[in-house]
Length: 528
Image 1 (cartoon, rainbow, N blue to C red):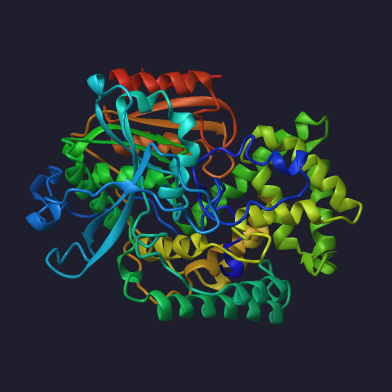
Image 2 (tube, rainbow, N blue to C red):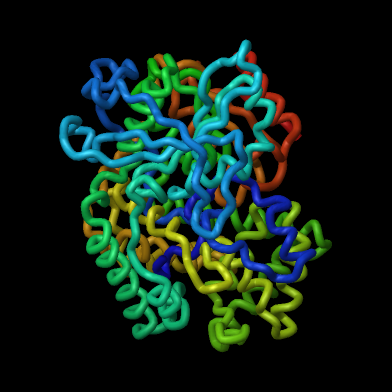
């Protein structure tokens, strides 16, 4: 994880409401690494790429050899992830082989790890329902078993299936640096540099991170594009024996679902996109959207506590400026401005976490940065022993393979006045993040020209939440439009948090009715 990777790279899809309450009730215990249901920033990742289907007309039947399409997964009890618990007995894991380069389907291959829980009502089984929890870089193999209770109703009639996308976890996961290098970066690199020396250190750290990715994972780096994973999805669909793809994508997973629909419109079954990434935004546009979205969520939090949003924002910005000058000691570590910003942002992912933000800010103002640091550790996948998971490595690999943009430090500096005006708390962080992510990446990105259209596809539910900080509501409106008339069906949740399913009873019922009974709601259906 490099210095520029510390904030909200499109989110991991699961709402954090309730997930962090242990930090309130059980002291400040770290999440223990792994892949928490936590956010991830939007750096230079572009939305679904324009690309020709691997079959004429994008029918959903890919031109792959029978040795791949004829695979039958060998489902076995799942092994426990590092530092984690083994899924329950109802879960089985398997591996599917996919081409490293889909342009060379008879060439080298890589494994893609799957996890599945079979439908409980076998007589009324519809098929498989594949999940992607976002990131990019979230491990579906780890996340779905932990989150399965949220989808219990869907699990009656669907086999619940998820996977580690290529470049993630057990699927040829990208690794870029070790724990010692990350700890060193935490101590020495300022993600919002104020001086030429700080800027040089920031850029050097990102260059070192990129070089480490090339050295350790160079073979897979050119092949971690969202379109590559979309083609993997179609192969997985065939291997699972499904005529159509039924899919639930959250946050970055909405990019992946839209990319699949664009490439394979005839393969679309029932698709839901929740917490939707704006398919029309470039690198600066994604950062601008999140600057607006996180400030909007912060304003809503401040209003809920009876504070004036402008005054409350300045109070927090003042704390961050103080931490920039003099970080708070927390044992042998320090709460820096960057880590505090990450800790604040984490709590805005669900309204249930707002009391935690109140407590963490009050403690930091009294000189105790423990809770904000633990919140940052939760996002940064750092456990109490100092071990970091590698989700952020995968995030960068996927984002930079997708986008051909390579913003410079000069371009980031040019964004600062506007972004600071939009958010005194998050603006500088997100402006600099544009240059910190892909500027010195060793692999060319796919495109800057995005096409999310899916002519001929079945109706796709596009669910946006008005108070979503990481994927602001406007992105859902744009995605529904880009998918095309009769394809994108907008559903609005008037509320807070990153994702509507499981948060809004109305939105959850709407999605369940669509998946289970094929009921397509009216465009513009609104849930409070």
